Length: 140
Ligand SMILES: [Cu+2]
Image (cartoon, rainbow, N blue to C red; front, top):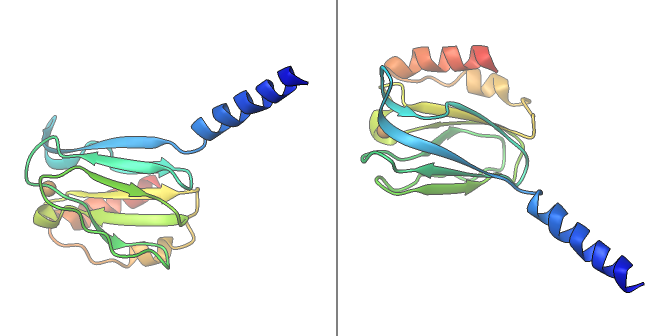
């Protein structure tokens, strides 16, 4: 009986550990030939997963541009790591506020839910980000 309880506790521990993941994305001034980029432009995560955007280079942040319904506005401080836990499924489009016209944007797909993709497609980005968004949408 005791062994069974122990086994059950082990199972609970393991399943809670594997439940929510955390992904790291770096905010960079330079990555190969690119300038002002997120190290991962498209992230696929499960519901309740977290993303940590690391302020690896200075001068960047994360600002949500278009999100699924019910998601509150999110804008992180410049020069700081940003963490967000994804509680609502769908496609999230975000940008770096100072570099929003320089192609520094990213997409997160939560729970493999692309039901709000049409809204994302209608977002008007500025400058180089227009082209980058087009490219990213092709990969979804
Ligand atoms: Cu930036």
